[in-house]
Image (cartoon, rainbow, N blue to C red):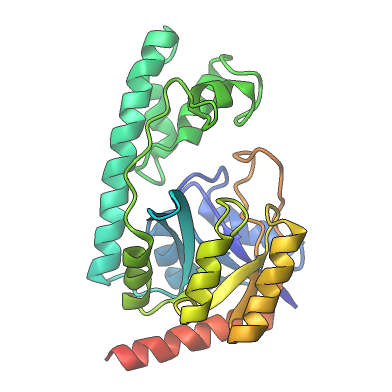
Length: 286
């Protein structure tokens, strides 16, 4: 049996409502999926309230965003089985919600100047589940109005929100230091996995954290990981006794390249190891 340990819903920037994910996973033969939306407790709360759905185990998780100021890039940490009442975790999510919305509203204001048909109110309709206006939500509003090239992450997106060259309406939130975010994840009693190290060229930081024993696992298999990075990640897991995980990072249509649920999976043993680490961490915390 296998599990997909990295899935997003409309609780953050995914395109599929959270209640529809388990039926999809069931049809692919998965035993479990991790609901791991960005910097929000909504997906973990849903998983705790619906431990099993359509024969699929729902694993509570959250993908936390931090920043490596030394190397100047974002970092994503997957936190499995967190305590959703943890004050530090709740504060992190509240801060990121406020900062993301502030940036998105500034982008929306500028989009209204570029496109008379566009309104911020229309974009807000994409946030009913999350309460956070992501760039994908802004793009969905533009797509609805026929103002894009037909893709959420196509040429229009890169013109507006790209990194290099910088998009003309891009405003990025200030992220919290990665070690602070790592401490928050552990304070919640969760098991912490370093997500997709290739995406933000994070291998130097990952080597550092793995050697320190600062993370519990590594997302070895991910659609964006290079073969070389995956091989080294697996070697690091063996060297330091870390959990090797895998996930599609499913966002539905809100992704440049499609990665359907169940196309990048880990054995059930990986989920069991994460649960055991989280249970031990919670016992030690009390």
